[in-house]
Each structure stands twice: as C-alpha cells, then as structure tokens.
Length: 316
Image 1 (spheres, rainbow, N blue to C red):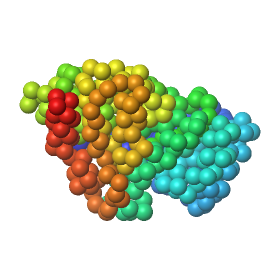
Image 2 (cartoon, helix red, strand yellow):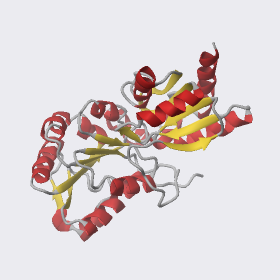
Image 3 (cartoon, rainbow, N blue to C red):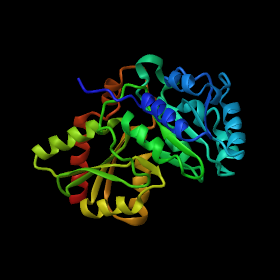
C-alpha cells in the first residue's frame, strides 16, 4: 500500500511553523479547525484562532479587514465553500484590493467522494479563481509539498490559494523537497515523444503511465505544473516545442483548469496537439478516490491511451 502524506496535516504543520516565526499570522476558522486537524495550532496559539462558525462569506470579510490592518490571515475550509459560497467576497474584498490573505481549500477534486459525496467534492475551484486578477494558485501534490508551498508563499504579496485534499493523499515527494512557485518541474524525462502535464493528487498515476509507455518504447516527459497562476508559460512552451504533443491530467474539470491553461500556451506561444483528461463537463459521484479517478477517465491505462492518441495526431 502506498504511503499516505496528508495534505491537511501538511497545512496544519506549516501553520504552526509560520505562527511560531511570525506574530502576524492568524487562523480564521469557519467551523473548520477540526476538518483540517488544526487542534495543535489551537493548543499553541489559542489567541490567534478566530472561530466564526459556518459563515464563509463573513470569514473572508474578516480576513480582508485583518489583512488591511497588517495581519496575515489564513482561512481554510472546504474548497467550494470558499470559491463558490464566498466567491464575491474573495473577488471584491481581497482580489480587487490585492490583500495578503491566504485561502486553503480542502477536498479539492474527487478525493472526498466516499465520505461526503458530490456536495463536498470540488472540481471547479481552480477554474473559478483563474479569472481573478492578483491571485497566486498553487496545487501541491502531497502533504510534504503543501508544507513547503505554505512556507514558500508566505511572503507573496496579494492573495494566495492553496489546494489541499481529503487527507489521504499518496506520497509523491520526499520531505524537504523544495516547492518553487511559478516554475514547472520535470519529474521524468524518458524522451520527446509526448509530454504528460499534471498536478496534485494524480501524479503517481502519471508516473506509472510514463513507466508503461517506456516499456512500449515511447519516451514521455512527466511535468508537474503545481503553480497554475502565475503559469510558467515559457517553460511549458519549451517542453511543447520538444514533444509536439501533450496530455493534461487533472482532478478537476477540464474547463478553465490545467488543460485550458496548456491549451492557451499552445495557442499563443507554441504548437502541438493536446488531449485533456479530467472531468469532461460532468459532476462526480460518491465513491472511493481511486475508483472515481478510474471511472472518470484518469486511470493509468487511460493516460497511456491518451498519450498514444496525442502522438497519432502529431504524426497525421
């Protein structure tokens, strides 16, 4: 069984570290401190927890006020309760004045499916925020990378959104692996036949697909795009110029997420054929994470087949 590296614990541990170093860091909870396993933060810094109950719109308003007064508020709850329920407040009271508020969205993707179902699965969150100016959007792969992303983003001016999952994510990176904001990361380079762009909780599947492609004599590059905004367009274009075709894999709708971002780079900066894997303009359903990813076309074999299709288009 794969080792678990909980993104929720990665967030919690980074919060404790940051608060120990910076007295301006505060945790805004909208009845969510237990959701993100934040008890240790409350034990260490009870005076820096502001509990507002189930009132996400109010929470973003409070965060805006604190940020405008020199504090650095972190508000963490379910991703959709922020990006949907409090979308207007995120836009008007944080994005527009470009305030230093940190939003951390739990249950990004299909990973919460077996416990809470479609009401607590959020596959639109990245797409909603891509259209808001000033936002930095980060999609770390596992708990260790959430921890590093939290620390790396601490000094960024303006709002930051960090996507986390259900707390049952597979380990991808070793503890202490740096998280570089705004840059892609080539994880595997087996050749220039096809590029596999991915982020977040599907990366281990993509790595396995690259191994199977290599056995078939197909050289794939696995490229992590953990920063969705600002996008490393130059780095992505360089990969596309080498391969001429690509597949995107994301635990998110294909609309306005990673697949759309890569398509924009192709349209403006490079050439290539693209196959997008993710939710195909549908909602998810209840089920275990791995079963759901398989059911919605993101299995290892789906990735291999998509790579083959992209290569066929390139050679037509």
